[in-house]
Picture 1 (cartoon, rainbow, N blue to C red):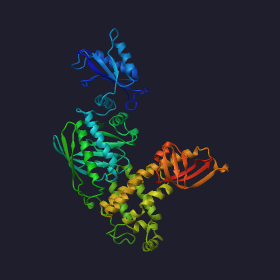
Picture 2 (picture 1 turned 90 degrees about the horizontal axis):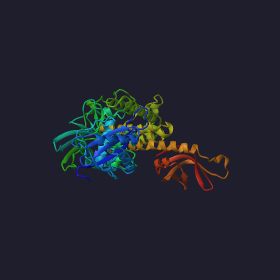
Picture 3 (picture 1 turned 30 degrees about the horizontal axis):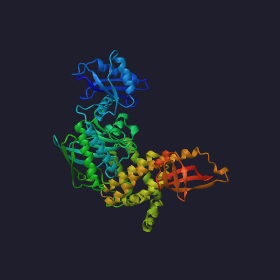
Picture 4 (picture 1 turned 90 degrees about the vertical axis):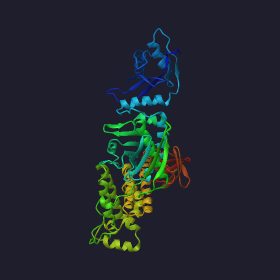
Length: 563
């Protein structure tokens, strides 16, 4: 290769999922880089791959860029499968001269990151002046993987800000971290600069990320279809498991929408995620201040960031909302020392209304009303004989006797029945309402403990039950729909087949394999769609009608699934 020639990297991407052009089904970008410096020699967007490639190579060959006054490629590198197209285009552009050799190879992370910046810019995400290096991205995805594996949102409420102190290369700095995910919708981590949350921040609104506030650094854990395709591709490129149901996105929430983090932004997110993960490993802390968790993160360039993360002391609840204790002369209410369920529910909703978006708050209100109805209709089954006599005396003339007579301990006693049989079978709730039921009852348990109406142990058990419900009940509902649709198209007709063995019962799933289920009593294998078996879990129960003919079991009818 001549001394004045350089090595070029030629890249091509389909941007149709990230960038739309009216009337065009495809948008393609081509990028030409000088390998040694990383300088962009040309970047072109077209509606066909060959057009984008031709325009980019022509621009790189004919237009000067910076100090490269006469670009002369001595070698051209491209991704696997592009070689023939690149050779053809180059041969047409350098007519009369020998085109440079073209080699297919796996392109490095730095080149892919430069292309990411172009795609992000085209998609409307502001780009930083100092972008992260590949080593920074590798550290960030490692930290996100550990954070995701811990699932700290199962233990930390987004109403509990965490104080983070960092000793950065530029000096000390303070931040507030908020673990996102207790709402069951938006999972991740938000990091605010300063010693307290900015006024007006609505950290618990899952309906709008912009409500987190301008300037916040964030890691979002989203389903792949909810993220721009280039962010998903970046995560996979840096080793994120392709079969995970969520993918991390690192963003800065700006006044004009999301922006890409700078190198320092990403390093702060790594330190924050590492600190929260380390703090969570110390145990399932529900409420209250704890001793600080300390540690350090070694940066990609060799520097270090030390961290100290702690939980602030809780506020006096009387400073945030009215005392939920009822009037002493109300004969049907609990004492002032132990408010009744009705008053606790009202105070909880009032507290949430101050911090939630209206649509999210209405979801909370609907769940609490259903829980109240359940307690009034079924709560008496959990009472001891003396309590039941009291309830019967009042219930004769007050249909809301249960929630007016009893306190927070009965909320915990009845939570399993509400989230289980009642929501699944009587309300026949859809996926969104089932998820909300788990999320809201988890938040309710934490709130009751925070304000002294439940012990930490009771709240922890109730919060875990709510968290499990928020995950498992929607999954069970999806499984129920898939099995119902599968049975609907089944060719089995046991009513007209005397040779068929028929089982109609609620059965427990004992074993799951791709496309196959086994039930208690040695029933199976039963063929189901692989999407259904991926959702199913041993131990779940299912209302079914199964038919066996000639040794083969088939699903004839499918009803509700219960985790």
